[in-house]
Amino acid sequence: MTEHLMSTYARLPVAFARGEGAWLWDNEGNAYLDALSGIAVCGLGHAHPEVTEAITRQAARLLHTSNLYRVPLQEELAERLCGVTGMDSAFFCNSGAEANETAIKLARLHGHRRDVSNPQIVVAEGAFHGRTIATLTATGSRRVQAGFEPLAPGFVRAPWADADALAEVARRRNDIVAVLVEPVQGESGIRIPPRGYLADLRRLCDERGWLLMMDEVQSGNGRTGRWLASQYEDAMPDVVTLAKGLANGVPIGACLARGPVAEEFRPGNHGSTFGGNPLASAAALAVLRTIERDRLLARAKELGERIAGGLGRALEGLDAVREIRHRGLMLALELDRPCGELVQRALDERLLINVTAERVVRLLPPLVLGDADADQLVDRLARVIRGFVGQQ
Ligand code: PLP
Image (cartoon, rainbow, N blue to C red; front, side):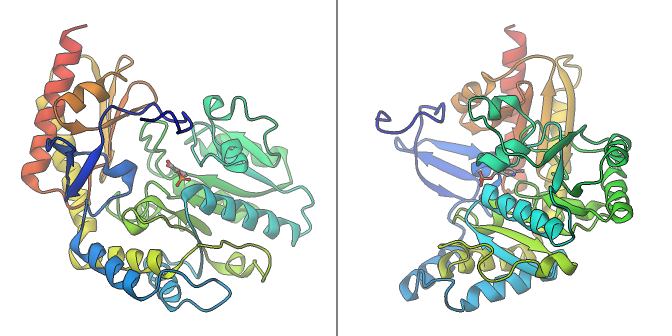
């Protein structure tokens, strides 16, 4: 019964009643292997005992007060996040789009305070930054923008993964204050930039006095085998945004900053009623503790190799497979043809996957996946893909 829901989603005909680790059970008791983690959210899998314990303990004590008062758990979370990312300060909100809105506001304020009257932010082709007006404008997809004009001013588009093209933009303008990029583009098909691109961006931003802002909403929180995907290069951002995997399913977003921009906001410049409330902060702290205690960064890397390697062997010789690529547990299997129907075919095999950018099977499995489940993921997906290609 979806008639009272706005039809923003093409929903699959299945609902889940419970989950445990990498598995979900539907209302009929069928078990599904979850290779998507609610789109990179449940990095610790479903019903993780540490998170469940933190949430239930906190819910029994205090859900919410207000940012009009101090929130000790939020302060502790900010300290822990700054520790693992090298940032100096944090602002908490409730989603990835809001975290990016915060970054956009920070960059504009930073510009205005330096006498740039019409500050511009460079964004990449193929980017995805969210669905609010400013973040859909920053998003490099007409499909996301169409119908929602007028778009927001203040963004300049540059080609993806091409630092020379960006330098060319730099030569033409003097009103740029920041570059906002995903270190791995998620929605447009797990696009991994060539080695050196992020470091080149860092150098360019240093030369020009621009802020380097990384959208790590999808790639952050350990998913790629580092806390941040930008840590794969000498490319420490000035501003970084997080959400999705930060609290394993409890809504939260964060915008972190370092250096002078970390002190840009003054009281009244920005806010969020719910942002960083005790419940969300307790959940996020449990996630961070667990990732460290269980060494899940190394595990994400290892699992990524195992799944990508396994798929490569299982699909060897299949011409329809263009490329298998991954950074940790952001995995893509690109086919030579549109393959949206694979989602339903995989569901029939009790496997949850996603198809993005028309031809790319996207896998974002939980960091707690066991070896046997990783191998099962490979087997099921390879079977589905061979069946699909064979019938065409
Ligand atoms: N940025 C990136 C890189 C994303 O992948 C997403 C969501 O897919 C967002 C921002 C938007 O996050 P949210 O849906 O939490 O607003």
